[in-house]
Image (tube, rainbow, N blue to C red):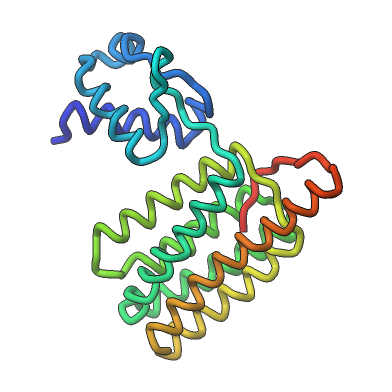
Length: 228
């Protein structure tokens, strides 16, 4: 049975992730107490935990605010994910079943369909599912939880502030195929890790170049809900 602190934490995190509490939203403990009939102590514990995980910023004389993300935060998050996700994928690779790999292939196929249908939201959700699956058999629950948590954070950033680097999605799908081929052929774990890591870092580089080009051209950024 979950504790009140765990329940309050899950309530807040889910509402941040689904957009109920958007960037800049002030989390007022007294209001939360009234809404959920949970005392103030678990809410305070939850806010400290959310602050430690990077979801909330506690501002003196203001209170707890849902963090406002920008592309710098997205780039740093994906750079971190490239490292821990690449490592988790390499550990997971020998333990992925034929069914796992078939599911991953199907996810990549559906991503192509979403791209053709100009559905960036679906593309992003399938992409996250693809990478979480490839890291899921790492045999280290803490590492897998870290990977999934970082993907969740990037999903919130994607919804709130992200502009797309043209052409990157198509390239990322081909890289997915390459990673799957390495896993299916029993490639050295170092090769799998390097491919998975470089895959994410290439996205960071593509978005950075696109961002710099827009800035130098004086073009306003167009935020859209997509991320390859």
